[in-house]
Every structure is written in C-alpha cells, then in structure tokens.
Amino acid sequence: MDTNIQNYIAATRSMAWMPLTEEGVDTRGIYIKPLRRDERTGRAPSFLLKFDPGAQYPYHNHPAGEELLVLEGSCIIEGVELSAGDYLYTPPGFRHSVRSETGCTLFFMVPVEVEILA
Picture 1 (cartoon, rainbow, N blue to C red):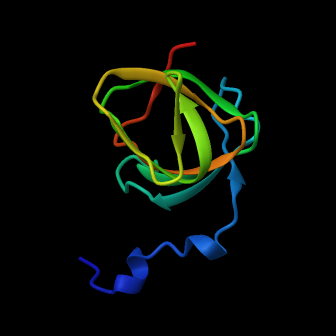
Picture 2 (tube, one colour):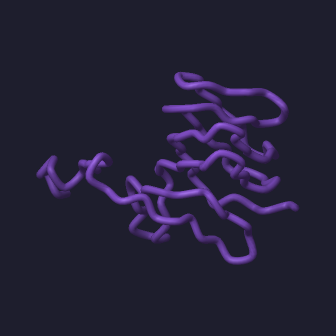
Picture 3 (cartoon, one colour):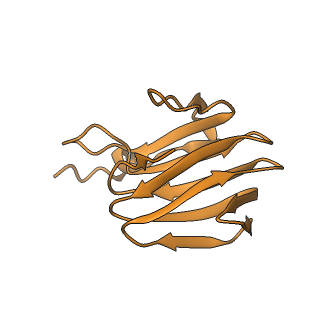
C-alpha cells in the first residue's frame, strides 16, 4: 500500500468542474469533480456534483444506496427540499430524481452505478 498521504488528497478547490456525461441521459447543467476512482471499475464512488439553477437528474434507482451532503444551495428530492448542511442516506433500492431550482453543490458516495428508470 502507498503510505504517502499526498496521493490520497483531492484538492477540490483547484480541480476544474467537468460536465457530467452519461450516455442517453440529459445531464445539461450538471458538473462533476470525481474525488476517488475505484481501481477495479474505473468509476468514481465519491464525487462532487454542481447543479446549475433548473438542472435535474432523472428518476433512478440506487442498487447499493447512496449518501449525499448538501454543501451549498438547495435541491429537491422526492418533493423535499434539502439545504446546505443537510445529509441524506438512501437505502439500497431507493428510487428518486434530483433537481435544483436555485443551484447547488452536493457531495455523494454512491458505491454502485445508478440505474436510470425514466
């Protein structure tokens, strides 16, 4: 194991926001900063997402659940508005969409890729 802590730090302030791209999914106005990549799958289970005002992510399933922390702004999930400082754990099999009227920045831990349902 690499014991150099510098190799495990994601300096998010100096990272550029990249447009989120997912084949067949409208992700306009959503940007990502991957924090960690799974060596086996190549996907990022921990990441930041930034939603422009009016952006939305479609209805989807979380086969292994998720954890979400609102860092800035607010978002709406299942009709409930979450604001800066709010934390949400969704259990495996939980289905929802995400939208933001005002814009927001969110921290996510998503252990397994979501399944788009709509």
